[in-house]
Image 1: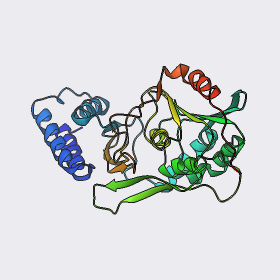
Image 2 (image 1 turned 135 degrees about the vertical axis):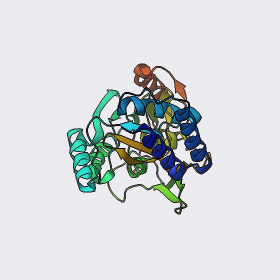
Image 3 (image 1 turned 60 degrees about the horizontal axis):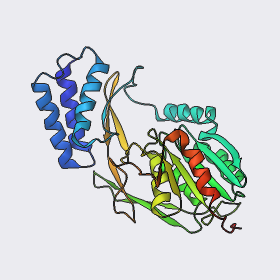
Length: 301
């Protein structure tokens, strides 16, 4: 393992691709300075080096999507996209499309738990549609994201489409490489029952809630559609791209920045701040108490 080359290549990739170019160059210089000071000389393997470099990269602004990631299994030199899709599809199937549970913990209230990920929509659309339709008749709904690590923006938009009555602009993604910004919209499905945009809705969050799951909570909160209950989330808003630099090391670099139309910003660094803060393990009980005090709104057809 040539530490000189690995640190230099990590810095080069961050400087070239990071969503904030000026910060990317400062991070490249930071790694070079730390390496010159001997900080990485004692790393006795790829895992140790990854830990040290990641700590330094995140010391600048706390970007949780940025880092040097160690993989126990060897990373293919040229990742097979078909193979990666097959692996993710298999995982989604084994995890029941990310629908961990549906129950009715109180009279008229449905509880939908989504974990561990919001998988790409093409892999889970049937299961997710069935889950959302199964709670469409509830007087109030709790969406549980306490153990959700993130996922696909199109899946976030799909879920939101069942929770708003009109097409709703969720965010505009801006990219470091000058690619034209891309808007994300939630649109109600053309047919089938939905929970809609009028009845009480709570979203549960915890310290493990991250990335795409944070977007779902943030979008619903900022539009006043849901009450967020639980703990502040991890604060990772920037989508990232991975670059293999060693059989067991991947440089993860955030390359985009979502901008919400209401706030003009996102949840990066700050996380989603709950409307009703409490310990994650107590969030469902707190949400049920809150919902029991609110009259049910009219059902949407």
